[in-house]
Image (cartoon, rainbow, N blue to C red):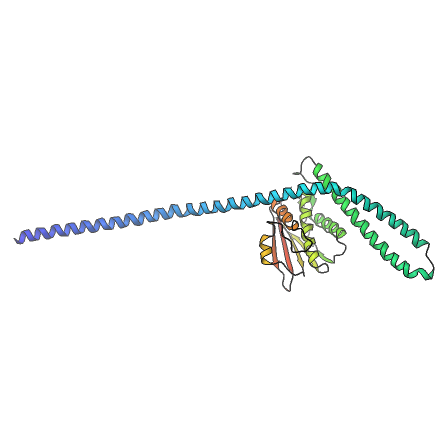
Length: 299
């Protein structure tokens, strides 16, 4: 009887051990499967999420490019229509200056001196208008020449210092009302760049934004190394609201009552096409700090 009990106890122990071993094996199998799933599935999910984000970014970029293309088409038509009224204004201003000069030469006595002062101010204003008309005609002519080029992928090569110097000179002709503190680097490094003319216009748009915010307090600082170009534009304007800042460069948004909101969008798109970036920061003491960074590649 005792042998039967012992035999039955051994069988129970073996069954219990087998069950325990089975349970341990199931848990090990579960843990191994979980590890394998985690090892493969988590990176796959991350990759899929990154691909989805990339697709969304590409879609947004395509939409921005379509908006810029639409603006470019409208700009071409506008340039065509602006030629005639600008020529008319140019002729009228030239005739007014001639008549004013003749009128001043005929009024040289003491009694007409106050009127002469008024005439002098009017003459200066007319000369400023004439200068602006010449600048507009020059810009439109250059725009047509760029459009007629057989290839826009081979712009002329120019030294970076000359590029910045000519850029500021052109901008100050258009904005004689601005008092800007412009600083160019003093080091001898002067790489060659072959940037398209659209980049000049993009940078000038950013200059104008700061000048509109604070015409008498604009600072523009250029600097570059062997591989990177940077321009910092600082003003003392009211700054840019965070909500507006989040949409700048994506959709037409303007912080000015008379603005159309397309300048920043075009600038952002153009600089992005040159593999650069535009960043806006709050300036210490009030105002906006706009920073542009562009790579420098050997032409």
